[in-house]
Image (cartoon, rainbow over all chains, first blue to last red; front, side, top):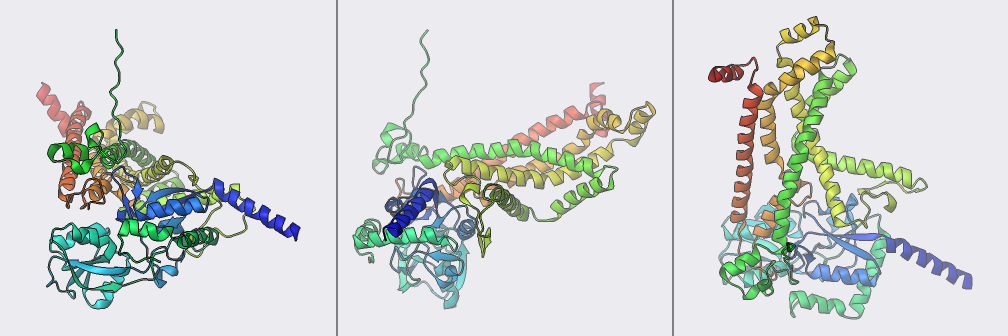
Length: 240
Length: 310
């Protein structure tokens, strides 16, 4: 018995030391505030930066941040340019075919339409970011999908009349709509999409996934995850 | 004599500009706000990225010329294998869309190097490198190492991008140079041979000094295209001026220290001016070069220069 415990201890130690030298590169988009953004100092910032740093601390990992285009965020992960994706990426079956997701660190969030006026036709041209659950959703509604590489461009398309409305996570659109002085309004009902937001890992990287899952568990258990969500998304935000 | 002291700017925490009054950007207005905004950390990074573009140009042009020269020499080699290789390189790269090469070369070289490194450093690693869609080498074989500083990663992707640029533009340069070498009057080469020079000597003493005037129009075209192709860096994940113009120009809510509406049009206007200035300067330089190279040549422009001087 003692021997088993000892072996396990040594094993655990060797695993942690192997990881301690190894820097975990955290990939994000850096263009989806408040989830993730590049702040005015040029650093990755936002909810996911703070969450990721805390998870790394709890999992005793050394982490650095890398920002990349949304378009190539999954191929860059599988090619090994970084080890995780924290980029407001909802857990979906399509993505699960190429990625492993951690448990959700953000509850399933509502998506919403923002438009110039309440009369906007939601079956007209709808702007959404390429490769998002919102883009897939628009494709099923019968509306004409207009895709953009960055979320900011979808809003710009609504402002200049290229699209009737933009569909994105409500939490991303909320500050934009609120600060538009009535220039942008919500249209239609909120749409619940996805199974929550999780950290993406390579399929072959179960070890790292386990570490982050455990760290998320502890943050859910002591309530610090909810505190962090409310800090970035307001008191009404969905929590665990 | 008192020593000149370097002026020091301090970058204040809070992501503000380089001046002390930038500590609280939200309380500022007008030109003061603008002076802080334009000197924020991200803007300084954008100004740096101008140097990235210039550095790429400064390195890509000579390397493409080198690839081109090699390709041209191979294409006119008497050895059929070398000749096929040279001609194959020229027609293959010229025939495939640039973007395909810009995407393929960095990826292939990166994974190829990592695979080789993996075989050398981790010979007892039993798991396969390709697992489904994943490309996984042992941590020690990663290039650069995961723990390397961010600038090492940046420099590495820059080097890969540079290689792609050299390879693609080299093929076009090779074709231009090959044509230029053949454009030197054959009679001159024959005369050189009659004087007892061998092939290499005739090439070095007669063709090489004279070919440039024939190559210049083609090469100046290539240079212009190269300038305009630098935004492809953005495609390769390098933060160049196009990336920053799009990122900084996009509308910013009050989550950011400097909130502003969609200003992309101003940033893109800046890009427009930047590229126009760059190409205008290049045109001037090429006009001078053309004049210099034409002097004493047996070409129409050489003749025109001779007449003007007489």
